[in-house]
Image (cartoon, rainbow over all chains, first blue to last red; front, side, top):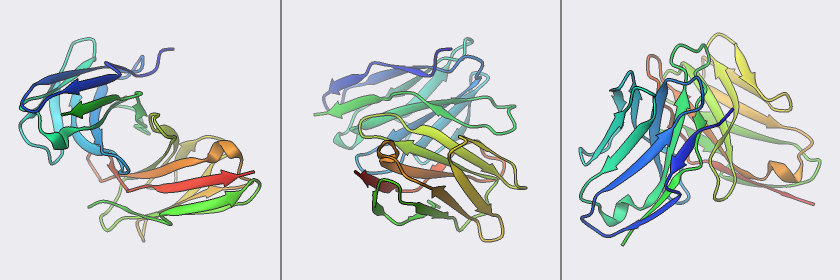
Length: 114
Length: 110
């Protein structure tokens, strides 16, 4: 049973560029959440996708957008990159109808903006 | 509102016990606990629901005081593999996202 997978593992971009990160949820899961984790901090919620729609959003600007596909996989897009966007981006999947709704995290994508 | 974790860091010898606390100023539906090792993804440890239900690893125990909006994670007879940063994630009612604390760094020495 494959867990949550993310690609790429690492990415280096320059300010002003755009980036797309990808996530495949754990088998059987239908909900994908994205988090940003700065060094030494806890993960911060960006947004959550279910049934191909953004259901909830954290305190992040519109430069951060996403998409969920019919197979439940998801993309996170960040436009006009800033130095402060450098972080570990984590994807977590869950089953919306589950009683416990535990979220399982992928290994993350380390984004460095120069 | 970000939950507050305490202590910020703790150092243990193998076999010693530790308690990590998490408190929120807002009403919670559930509390989730994760452990993250350096350079790795957070690993699910335990979830506690309002009403007393919980699910997690056998060797991990935790409590959830709904009145005080506080949760505690109990680590007994610690092993070297317990080292890492522990995060609590608070889930407000009717919301699927988690709001994480700043973490508690646990170091277990031989």
